[in-house]
Length: 237
Image 1 (cartoon, one colour):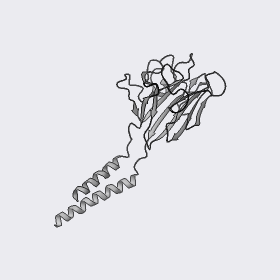
Image 2 (cartoon, helix red, strand yellow):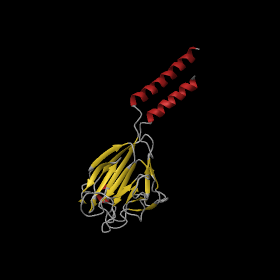
Image 3 (cartoon, one colour):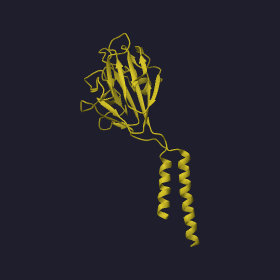
């Protein structure tokens, strides 16, 4: 009986502690190209997103992965925050087949503020660009869905593509994580005079629903009461 009560109390403590942040709910995996390439953003040119969003220089810094497909965790929820763009092309960001944000050209990255937010249960997102300097976004799809048509390779040399990073400050492949809860995406829409991966910037945050506090506290209390009853019975015996 004592062993069972102790086990119940330990389970209650673990449940109570499970209300904290979860780790590694998203993972970067190779796309259909079979490999990911470590590199930096912008790679070329000047990235207008890095100074206002991260306080780092606009050239030569900001590290992560090209050619990655983002996979998630069952039961997780994903929040997409769009921070805008600096681009001549007209680009669009969609989740679950619905448009979250459309950029009509120009620079609206500064000040660093969220332009649109979407929360859903899948990582079925895509970028679309019309690859021209005017008109509505259309034609070219850069998708996270390997079963969809379009640029599913998302490789360094096959633009349009998006750059992915859990830690823009980790400057080597060996230390730059491929799993985490907050992921940044940087689109390059293939405009050769604007090759800097700030054509649309998106942050994905993954989270699990916390264990309800009242239930956790109740379970913990029941375990402690059970230990007290057992202790009193031993003393009476």
